[in-house]
Figure 1 (cartoon, helix red, strand yellow):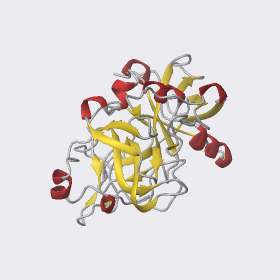
Figure 2 (tube, helix red, strand yellow):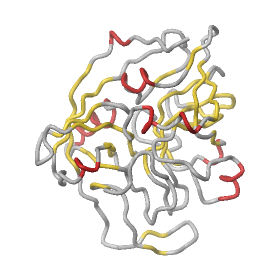
Figure 3 (cartoon, helix red, strand yellow):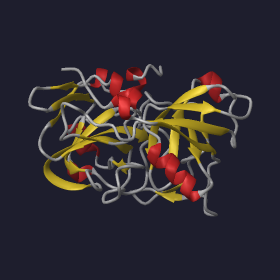
Figure 4 (tube, one colour):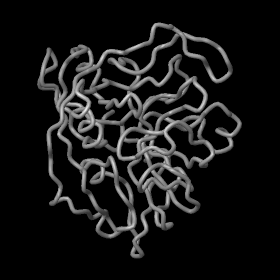
Length: 289
């Protein structure tokens, strides 16, 4: 059964931000999980050579965000940008040399409260820090008509309509994922609200990653986390399941790793991930690359 939802009820609303410069404290160092002080790129700005679809690990960086990083300097307006925007939404450049270009929302970064936007390399080269980006927020309020026990969040109409998922007669949903994460690997962001931002897959125990098939995750991968319920905050619940999208790169700091922005959660056992990396990345699902 193909996915049916209340598409005709969903409102499309504008929210706006601007490409924000990277920001750093006075000290040049971050301390890695094994105690090494390093100076590497981090979040913010325009990342020219890391895009959705690229590897999430193996970069000399910490929390790097693919494409253009957008935020609003007004706290409440940034809350609207962070909450109402959904993965897959159109992002329109409305100032600067790239005015008129259109990108796609690919993830959210909690803590920093950033929105990540994918643009083609040609557009990225026209953008500058301070350019205004207006997102057509379109997805809040979505409900699956045939799978009501599965809660959607941060999911755009655009992504849901192209998602290679199926619903069975009993209301269960099967979705291809790049991997299934055990709950003990989840780190920074546990306990916070999943309607915005992300939480991190800890990657510093490489043996565990290899054993679970998680060593080669890509930015934009759709990934499941078992025994997690995000209905009203990120937490442990045996038998529950969460599905999200890898939003930012791996990290060097303890308790951190590639960030996962939630798109689905279910606490009744009706969300079934199937490992199929070839069909589980938004770069191909949304036609970004």
